[in-house]
Image 1: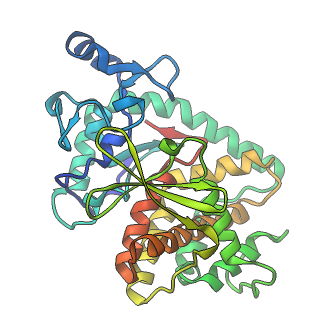
Image 2 (image 1 turned 180 degrees about the vertical axis):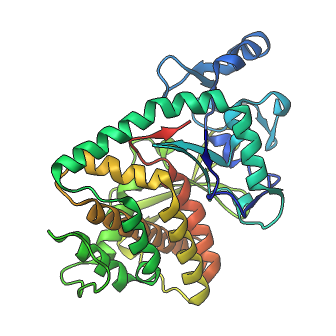
Length: 364
C-alpha cells in the first residue's frame, strides 16, 4: 500500500517539556491494548464518546487532561496507547492514505528534534493492518462521491482547484484578496482566479467573524478549541453572547476565567511581510492536505451537489483563512502579539480545530 508522506517530509518534530497539549486529546484504546489497561488500570479505561463500542482513556473529572498526566509528564509513557504515540501525526484515509502533521503542536515549529518523515514511516509500519482496513472503508465512499458529482455535472480533477490556490497564494494573505476569492466562489460559473473581480458586497471582517465564532461556539466550554500558549497554559476561548470568554484549564481539570473579549472589538490584524510569508506557507499546507479536500467533499454532499467543485474548494479555503485571521485578531487582543509571532501562534490555535473538521474520509 502506497502512503503519501509529502505532508511530513522535510519537517522535524520535538516533544517539548511541560506542554501536554496532546494529553488533552482523549485517545482511543485499541483492542490489542485493552488487556493491559484492564489488568493494570481498570478504572482508567472508559467508553469512547466518538467510537461506538470503543474505549478511551479517562480524563480528569471527565473533562480535563488524561488521568495519567502528572506534573505534565505521562505516568505510563512506555505503555501509552497507539494514538498517543502517533501525535502529532495523523493518518488520513480517503481514496488513499496520507500523513498530516498537526501544526497546533509547538514541537512542529522548533526546527529541531526527530525527522518527521522517518518517524511517520515507522508509525505506519506498526499500523499497516489498521490503515488497510480504514482504506477499504473510505475508498469506496470517495468513488461514490465522484460518481454523484459527475452525474450532477460539478466534478473536476481536484488538482485543478489546488493549482488555482498555489498559483494565487497572495490572494489568501490579505483581506481584499480573500474577499475576491469569496466573490468568485459565490458565482454561478466555475470559479476562476485568473482575473478575480472586485469583491463587491463581501464584508470580509463579517465573514471572518462568522466563521471563527461558529467554530468557537459550544455549549460546553470543555469542548472548545485549546490553544497551548508559550507558557504552556491551556487556553480556551468560548462564545458567550456578544463576547468571547477566555479561560485557562489547569492540570486538575478546572477552568479559571481570565476575561471576556467583546467580539465586535476584534479586527483582522495587518500582516507584515514575515507574517504574510508564514500564512502563505500554511495555506500551501492546507492546499496539499487530503483531509482538507475531504472536508470540501463533505460540504458539497451536505449542500446537495449544487455547487461546482472548484467553487466549493476555493470558497472553503477562503473561509478557513478568514477564520484563522479572525483568531489572530483575538490573540492580538488577548495577548498583545503581533507580526510573525502572532501568525505562528494563530496557526497553532487554529490547526487542531481544522483537523477536526468533518470529512467523507477519516483519520485512522
